[in-house]
Amino acid sequence: MNKITAALVGGLFDEGGVSAYARPVLFGTAGDAVRQALPDTVDACVFVHDDREPAVAGADSFALSGENRFAALSSLPESEHVLVIAAPFALAEDDALTHLAETHITTGYGVSVLAAEQQGYDAEGQPIPRNAHCLAAMFTFDALQKTLAAGCDTLDALVDAAVAAGAQKGVAVTNEIVEICDGGSAYIAFRAMVNRVNFTLIDKGVQIFDPANTYIAPDAEIEAGATILPGCHIRPGCKVGAGAVIGPNSILERAEIGAGTTVNNSQVYESKIGAKTTVGPFAYVRPQCEIGDGCRIGDFVELKKSTIGNGTKVSHLTYIGDATVGERVNFGCGTVVTNYDGYHKYHTDIGDDCFIGCNTNLVAPVKLGDRAFTAAGATITKDVPAGALAVARARQTTLEGWNDRRRAMHEKDKK
Image (cartoon, rainbow, N blue to C red; front, side, top):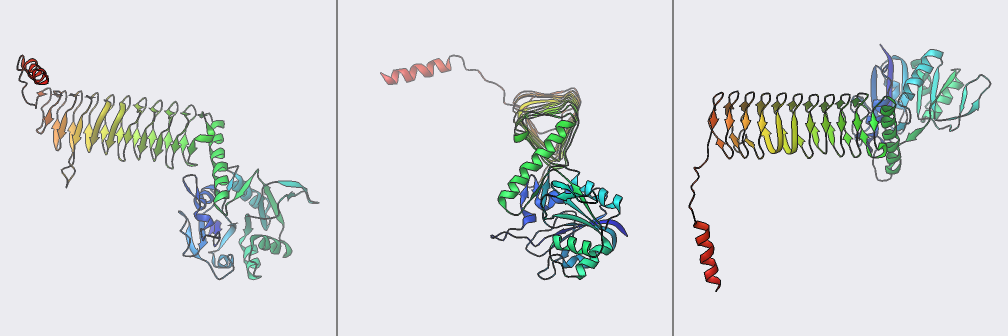
């Protein structure tokens, strides 16, 4: 039997038919925001909704039952406690629901509510909420089932019924709760979440130059000593090491950035970058890339599904796709790994200490051994042995005086 089940109760729509839980907030939906704010002690999560509302990731779906949004809670699997969320919201404190759960379990009360502020204390020393409207409450399983049997159709009514039936009521106080019911409130919740995430990171030692214009997912792991410059989007699933500098105007998505690495005006998706590497400006690292330590991925470089060894320099205007590149390789400007023939993708292998001349085309599948050198302008279609020079371009022909004669002819035609 689960100790704590969380139940998100849907069925809330604005005049345009948009679900409150589906409203966008930061890098997810309002439902995602609530799901991510649940205490770690929650064993199971359910979302009570109908076909008009998309499911919430990580929550089991329960069908709404008639006009009473809360009636379906009577069919929840048995647990010791149930955390009921009546509507999506954003919190100024990321541990507010954890505090609610701890208050409820520690006191042993039958029901406990989350309140945004208090206006004093009652005779028993319990905080009196300033706003009586309740969005989150925690019940013992038995207390909740008894109140549901009475036909209560709001969370406030459920709480009042539990108290009327003899349950003691606890109150956990937090700074601010922003209910999400329409586009305007979703934006206010978005700003509240941005501030909560950014200032929590600042308190932990991350330098964020412009918190109002920096957008970081709540699950991002950013170590103390990292710097986030303005205009950055650090989306879900990211890790940033100590001393790294991200931005300005960079996008990370499911990316891992090593300690001391800089990502300047660039985008990194579903890839791992090592320590003390520089990326950008204007680099594009596509999914399934792994870049080593001490590398240089410069301006207008695009990488896709490639491994780049330690110390390799790809300074500018280069495309590398479906390739394994060794250590200490130097790519000249304008290099292209031509990996696609219109039907299939092919792999390129480049050994350690290679030198790739400017404007080289590496036509996959092809292999370059360690210390191979390609001449500028070469189109490489065959494997190059270790230590060899590959020249694959037309031999230069020089016609002395040719352009002087051409110019003289055209000048004569002007007269």
